[in-house]
Image 1 (cartoon, helix red, strand yellow):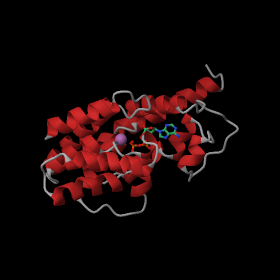
Image 2 (cartoon, helix red, strand yellow):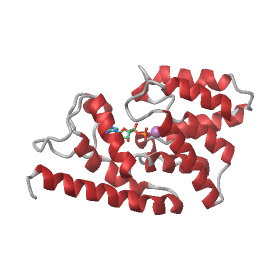
Image 3 (cartoon, rainbow, N blue to C red):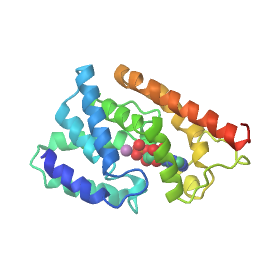
Length: 211
Ligand code: ADP
Ligand code: NI
């Protein structure tokens, strides 16, 4: 079943250039399995399935939220797993996004672990690469010192280019380490956080022409 899911996801995300490609999914899966092992918590099968499918219904990769959900639903229907497991996988995927997870309590150990794994892949060296890949693909500038850092911004506003990839670090990426659910992920986040801080320091030094 894992293999079947893997090949479906590979196919679906093959063309992606927004940082939601197959290798993102694979890293999230591996980090999630590592966390579940270290924490000795969560069902590894549910975690692996949810990690593999977590971006399939993403708003950013589908024309509409409904179309994304339909795609996920119809794939889940092809699997021979019980209804309860399907619901659990869907619930994890529905609740882990930054938006969905913001403020709303995650209901299961599995959801917490997949969310941590997804967040870890948005920070550190990989996170830096993904932010500029996403920004470039969306036509967003690298940086614009005239724009304010805003705390809350809708997806629509992002799409209209009211932010920059450098702003995205202050709006979201630097905050992720304090939103992690597990101790294992917090430990993994440390060197990633330092990497982003060092990158931003150097970025502004170069931006301002300091040698
Ligand atoms: P996830 O898929 O991890 O739930 P998102 O879909 O919000 O998270 O973001 C996916 C990737 O795209 C992340 O690495 C994130 O930093 C990046 N990203 C999302 N929005 C922006 C933005 N406005 N500017 C730059 N990068 C962004
Ligand atoms: Ni993701």
